[in-house]
Image (cartoon, rainbow, N blue to C red):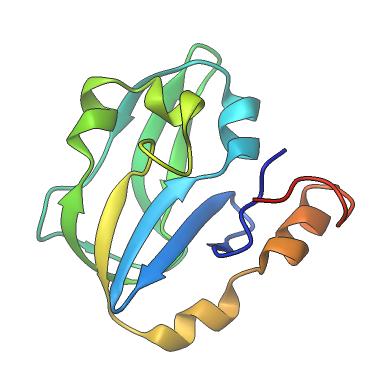
Length: 133
């Protein structure tokens, strides 16, 4: 399973990609595989504040509804309307077009509380040699 090296991960299976002080957030390939076919995504409005490890929205699949937890704190500057309109993008491209939010990062120190790609692979029970980016 793909676990991109350049991202940081939460134990709840969200990822974050940092570009300057903008953090892009999504759910991992592992999470979408566990959920099954995603049929609905609920995300906060632009301008909302998200807090690290607190619920930021909901993803519903044919199996269940699950909270999405923010890997970092900050202000929502963009939400992915494509994912709201076509939730299946979460299954098809969780690290590309399937991202959820862009957030203005409040505290870079919070990144230290997240997992590296290797630590995340260990968390989901994969060996470091599998996966890749």
